[in-house]
View 1 (cartoon, rainbow, N blue to C red):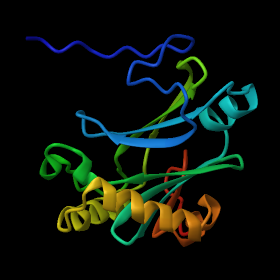
View 2 (view 1 turned 90 degrees about the horizontal axis):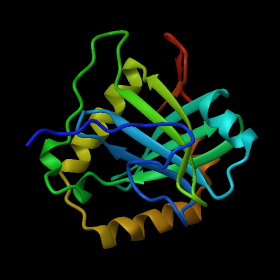
View 3 (view 1 turned 135 degrees about the vertical axis):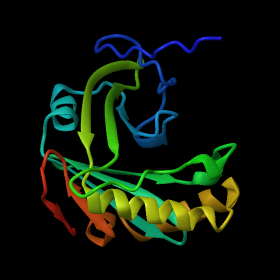
Amino acid sequence: MEKQLTQFAVGKEFPLGDTRGKEGFFVEYGEDRTLYMVVCFPNMTEKERLAITQGNGRMGVFVYDNVIYFVGNFDGLDGDSAYNVHKYDKPEEIDIDMPDEGEGIAFHIFAVDSRNNILKGIRMCGMGTRWTKALKKAIELQKEKPMDMEEFFGKVAIAHQRWTSKEMMKLADVTYKLGSPTDEVRA
């Protein structure tokens, strides 16, 4: 059976899942070996859409107690997405290619209105080399320590009691300014 290509169209229903009732940042690893971040808010404003799709953006990788957090800031719109490679059926297949210098993993960011699951905008980024290497290392370490979802959610609750997303960005192992050709900085 032939696989169908997924079509993304601004103003149409978001094809990768139903976001209705959700709010925040959510990251997934795609079959095409890229990362997807869905940033969704009910009744998303034009200001939020522009911040996510065109504004000054920074992404961080923060690891605490074997949980990986993708921390984002888009023109002051802060959020994070906790990530557990063990939620996938075959975590051993989650693998990021080691990039050559000047290259990094593809990162797709979708702005979705979670009132009606309508795609409001898309941003595609190539992440920096150091950022990609740091993420690869974090995923490899997470694979070595299996964690069920109950344990995962408990660890996430503790981290969220301890830090805000903005504070996590300051503590991130590595951050990357979106759109920067070489400018990788620590938070």
